[in-house]
Image 1: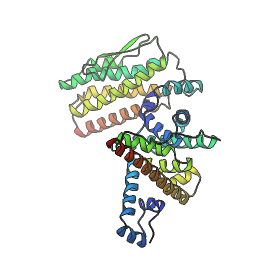
Image 2: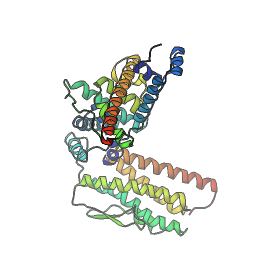
Image 3: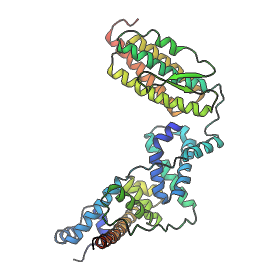
Image 4: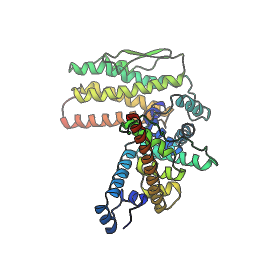
Length: 168
Length: 225
């Protein structure tokens, strides 16, 4: 069990964390995902790769967690507006900025963006997972991308001003 | 034509533009730049890395798994069989691989690996160490932890086994006997833990390798014993 966990935990945690949008929820829901997976393991038929099956279990657990949560904690984490006075060229910094921007998206937009752009699900698959039409998934994705872009541009502008100020 | 909206541009990351959109993009540097920004953003999202879970997640999870009965607190008599597998395979590697290197039979390797499990404290050769250094499997400690260590040792041993067989010419008789032993011991372990995916994978690998070897031997027509 531990060997399985060690091998797949980073992937499970990543998808759950990004759908959850917060560490606290991600810890609970990824634990739930593993419990579900271990419960279902005897029924795993091997008609897909184990990693694919487990990934699907993790996504379902996170979405179920979202659904059963009546009121989620409002995420007040703001984008860093005063990062060091330079543009986020560093890949780590860029990833952090992207993670924070994703956290600020409305739930449904974030779910679709994570499932499509990060995890590579198709709109048909997302439609099945979320119980919506593929067209709705597409529309949410385009809105999410646009909103992300707006947030990232605002962040870049703030950084640009900070950079100019530090040069003056 | 007015500028394309960000949502429309977001669609163009995946889909072809209409003739009007294409014409506008040709003329409008601002929209082209925005589209490139969206493409970069999408590319960066696709490359987002995995995330390491908090280190205390596994202990908490293991406690829950035990509480819910998904991981049985194995009785002490169960543990030696799994440990035996790791120890047997590790001993095979430590002895057998050395024998392979000398391109001669390794008479001491297989009988040792085939010995029945002993009760009480045991030591298994560390299959990850070049000389097969010892890793202690504590009999007096947490049995589940012992089993987990055995599984880890088993996985590492299997890697070494594959490596040894891909780079050296093994003695067919010793190899066949060792594979027989692995198949038998993993089958016994599966009687106790039929759903264990790790043991299942080891068992199937060993069976496949044994069958491959038998096929090769039959095709070569050379006497083995």
